Image (tube, rainbow, N blue to C red; front, top):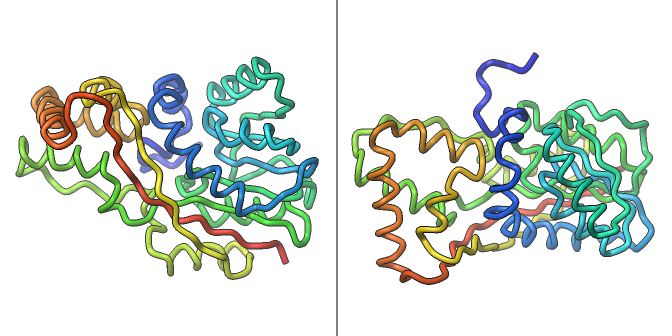
Length: 272
């Protein structure tokens, strides 16, 4: 049984309903961060790697293209189905399983490395998820995690918040999103320590959400459960908020293609 107080993005069954729109809108953004994390792993071709919280498969496919032996897991069965479909379409040898990343169904020390791109940071017990990654990686192997940082510089969320504030200034404050728990470097380092890993090397990476237009993006704003729930929670104010969101973006960036940046931290440590 899942805890009843989980946020929408922490509920795997909700992701089943967002596979296609997530892949279209947000996966290109996460791939930019994934490539930086894959580089930080530094694994040579032929090595085995575990992708935890693999989503629709961007990082797994990128690693397979680098001739790594990839195993991907996600708690959303439909995300896993999509990974397998895409792997088959590309002829990529990726093993994928629907699995709780807090209780990995693998033996100890069987992978050469592991990564999680905006994945374990959503787990109810992120430290347990990272400890499980450490457990299944061989001694000396790298473990890399991508987390959000500098939320004030995540332009997509900032633009949506500005639109909400304009239309509904008295809206009650929302709880801190679970994925922002490790936005401060000290908290991110502490996560690695609690999970039994050494002090990580931490770098930052900037990625951009690209869209053909502000209106196109607004029509797909519910690309993740949390975003969909945020809009639904606006009730009858939602249409006005979306209109303001589009108007603000068009005023600032025009009616053509737009690019909205976000910043993430990438922490990499070795199993000791």
